Length: 463
Ligand SMILES: *Cc1c(COP(=O)(O)O)cnc(C)c1O
Image 1 (cartoon, rainbow, N blue to C red):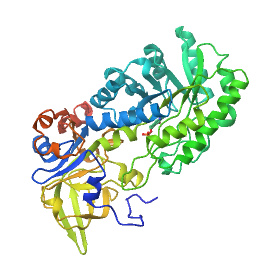
Image 2: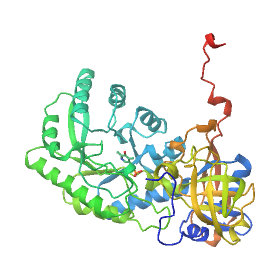
Image 3: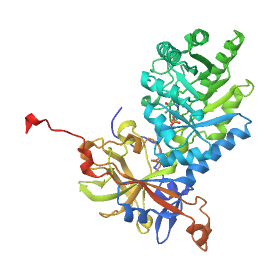
Image 4: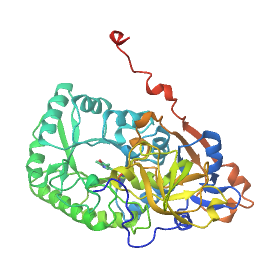
């Protein structure tokens, strides 16, 4: 797989206008340029500088409610557990927790973050292929809802630990359904060769064994086959296999109360057709609707991806023969998805005049000393002068959480907007009350560069 995103699509990229039109959280204002939930991104850049992550609370809420409504309409007793690894900022977790979301965590740190954001332990499930003794002890101490166990070895370890603590661990077995999610290899987790979950053929025996172990209370089954899954077929196939296992277990006298359906629902980064929440709810209902099980889902990307942008400035434009390189002040250390997964992200100018200029192809890159520090190739963009602002879209998931300080680049600032996402005229004309209710706050200042080496020590014998 090549490291840089290549224009392998068979039709032209959507224009900035088309990208904006497809996203209710984005609007164009003739004077203020690109608005995010009604707030001019230029105002945020002016106040906070760039690069800056901007998240939208109204967008997060609207997406959570759309998903919850889809599940309710399908008459599914399903709880939404946000996959914290997609975006673990406390403010984001607060918004989701307030909506009633639980959390799916994959480390002690995420568990503590979720608790710090006031998500009750009773709404937390713990996933992951390598939980340490300390992770498991913490989970038991907090009394979280469920530990998703991924191997016979982990089950034995948890049994010893829980029994020693005089606790009973509520356990779901994460089963690998051996289904290819048809997504990028680096984000597929449900094939037999992937490291995740208990092999399907061994799951029933291990479940029965779990019921005999001290300190273990088996509640049900869990699965998660990968991320950015755009069609329903892999979900249907995997759910069907898990539903079959529920029936087999019950037929053998094992109680199964819960099925955790995992996450993985895709978002359209470009203009790809994706299965939305209604389709997902339908797939869940088709396989589990008649089974009388409590259901969990663990979406990360779908809830938070479109609710964030990476706001960045043009440092300079380099012309090389026939190419135009737009060099941004954001880089792969901030948003690694294009370098790591060949991911396509929309890139939209922010300035009011830039939004109406003629488009021509450009390569959009960051300043890091790696060729893979490339956000887009041959992307249709207007002429952009040094200092021009652009927004990299759909950067709310697997964005800031995957940042590094490579090249001694401090972590970018983060801002939370709480605005309006209905792009009707009231927002722009006569909507003063509406506009006055719009707020935004810096939720993490730009990291001070000296903090990068604050905890480093130079041995005395070198001085
Ligand atoms: C990453 C992960 C998720 C979330 O995946 P998305 O594609 O962001 O929805 C859910 N469950 C588990 C176990 C995960 O590892």
